[in-house]
Image (tube, rainbow, N blue to C red):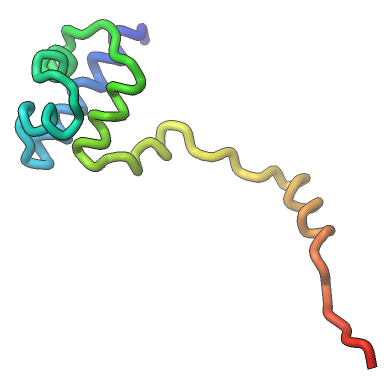
Length: 97
């Protein structure tokens, strides 16, 4: 998939989420600081390039910041690293008599 196709797909999905949130393009513009023209072009697939900052502001406007964790989730700890962490933990506590 080419970058242009991915941006167009994201724009269409964003439109569905925006409508699902019952927000107009103008309301998203007011919340995000992104112009209505840019939002319209993005949603209709006519915007070849959108900055990451603009995209994040649009996601913030529709309260979808938790979705970023799905895009790039944190890398899980490898079993090797987990074992090293477990070995460093104390097994018991003893008090002096």
